[in-house]
Length: 251
Image (tube, rainbow, N blue to C red; front, side, top):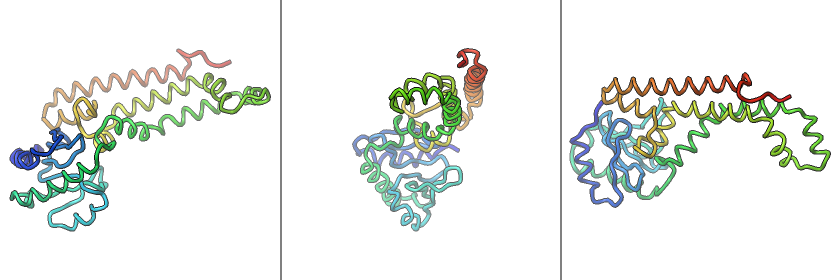
């Protein structure tokens, strides 16, 4: 569903004098950001979407026509939806817009809606896909080599660097590639943490989402096909590594 352009214009008039204000398409609507931090948005699901102090979320939810913002069925602290009926007048809209802009100004340059924040969130979310290959390869290292190193007075850290890591290249590469492949098509974490900032946090999955939202199914199909081909190539490379086609197995 497209956002209300009239509502977006009214928000623009209210926040136009704020320093560092920018506009970005996010969550199917048009968001207004201050120094890169989202403040308020004309929601793609009607009404208003805004950022608030997480500590004040419950109190603000007690106000008429205010609802929690849900991501995958989970209410998100620090986010609010306000019904279109409650922002009909300039006074009503200004009250909510001030709350959003005030928090965005105080929040400063956090990790939300930044490339750094998206990178950290994606690494943490995809970490389980790397743990299993890493641990399996580390466990396969001949313990006699480790004990021989320790008996020569080499520290555990140095033994890990000079013996375990070189013998675990296959598992390390597999884990990193699997994590990257998973992150490549991830949607929920990207949208929640990074938003949709072109040139900053916009990913392939978000591009597909935007194309569908714009009813450009041809573009969405082409982008999906590219993602499918890349994913297939990555998985082929992973299985080739596991079968020791490219990396010589340890003796």
